[in-house]
Image 1 (cartoon, helix red, strand yellow):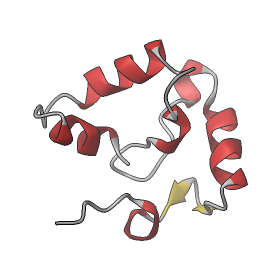
Image 2 (tube, rainbow, N blue to C red):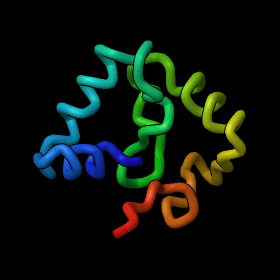
Image 3 (cartoon, rainbow, N blue to C red):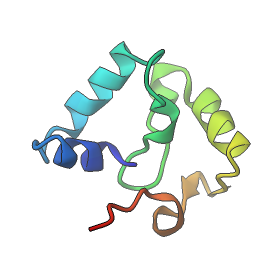
Length: 80
């Protein structure tokens, strides 16, 4: 999922940054590594654990091309 998708599902579609803060504060209890930005990139490099996030995703068979993953393929789809 993207940060924005989670924010939208929580009823605050413009609160993607707050989602990131919540994930950062609770990363032991949430699958934080499965949340990426709207461009399909890992946003955690600036926090010092982007390589870890990418490694965890690659372990789940997620493929990155030029630092991005294919959102059409990997993004969680909400089913009606």
